[in-house]
Length: 170
Image (tube, rainbow, N blue to C red):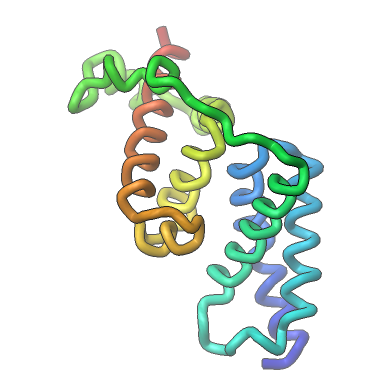
């Protein structure tokens, strides 16, 4: 693969990388830093990229590793989320009438606002599943967590998102 081809393909994935970085950090400056550093690392390691493999997954892995390295370096502790915050004890097995109406009347802007309120540990897997259309197995490999954890976090993130949207509509 010619360097220009790789650069063009990477540039086309910039919005995807920004969205993933946003799901991880919620910080616009950090998003830009992570995306730029991802491209720098990828171009520096382009000889290790095998043409014909999944460039998007390779770049997402680089970005995620950069993010984790920065978190470790800053000694940021993982946020502990209480059961009350997740509201799982009140979550019905299916959408209730209020939630169903809220989802039906929801705008993209409202969904975006609600998504920004999700904790990063839940927002990242949901983003990868819903927006990037990755499988649970791919997400598990990318985030370095078990597939069952991915499935649980995506489910919980969807429930939190629906609850936030329902509360906004009340």
